[in-house]
Length: 149
View 1 (cartoon, one colour):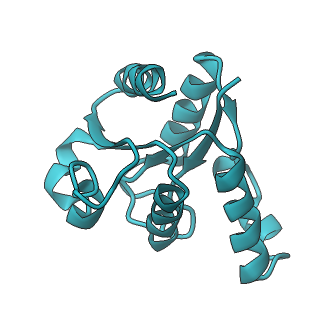
View 2 (view 1 turned 180 degrees about the vertical axis):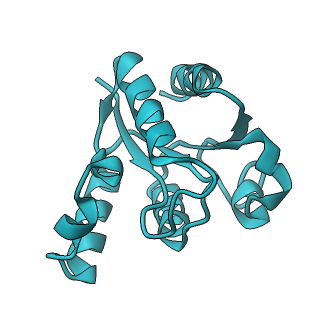
């Protein structure tokens, strides 16, 4: 069963994609029959749980999940330095990456992240795709996984 690292903003907040929408994307991934390596981001009480870990523990836990995953799927509508770091790490691990963002935010999404798609320096499959509905995001995820795994 395909194991997916799902990344999204936590400390950066949920201004553009709500916690509920992120939960729906996680649900869509599971409905497609994939296993999530990460689901903690949208869990109730996650900030209290995370406060018991130091920064290195959080990094090492998340990096291990990146290593164990077959592909990375990131919702990047909410800017997050941590998510940017995770994207870079999984690219360097040579794993396929799909970044999803709300269609109306197109120009506001990081050009550096979007520019990895088509970059001569990025050798792993990498796509940034806009979506309007959770159903549309689910279909993008399905097609990406079929094509790259």
